[in-house]
Image (cartoon, rainbow, N blue to C red; front, side, top):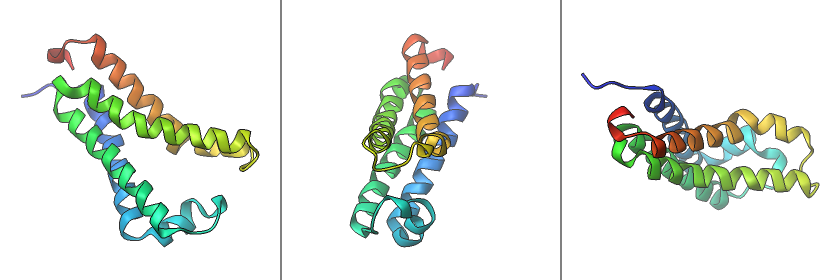
Length: 133
């Protein structure tokens, strides 16, 4: 039986969450927007679907990384790349005054924490032989 460590479960959880979020954004963008992002400006279904495609892609990369220890580092970094750039935009919006500082704390569990976890998994995979992943 294959040994599944913490990295596997973190990638599985984050990948499934990102993929699910992306699919919701792609299929029902307006309800997603009203629930999650209504305070960021007017609803734009094309933009919500574009970001949904990025979330789905990030989720697929994380799920793939969970199942492919030899590819774990580059796939986790790929997933983290979108997440990190997305988080940087959130920080920029606060620093520029477009969003209140309270958004930094509100966004932590859904924006910053997944990014940090993906980076942590990727760095661990870079330092560990694939047989121990």
